[in-house]
Amino acid sequence: MGSRIRNSLSRAKYAAVGAAVGAAVGGLWSRNAASTGGALGGLAGATLAELKSGAGGVFADKSDDADGDDSGAESDAAA
Image (tube, rainbow, N blue to C red; front, side):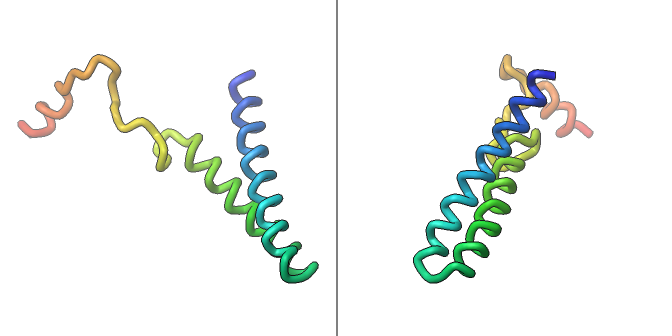
């Protein structure tokens, strides 16, 4: 249960930082651009957090097993 809460807070943190950056950049032009920039920044931050936290995400560890045994690769090659 604690892991789920930590993951949710991490995603919320990324979304909040993205929204703040987007609003700051958009605020250089106008109020409407600040609002739009905040929304798009929040969406980008949430998407980045989801990719980072997902098992098959962009930043996921590519090694399947910790001991370095490639027995699965050999059985795939034989098939």
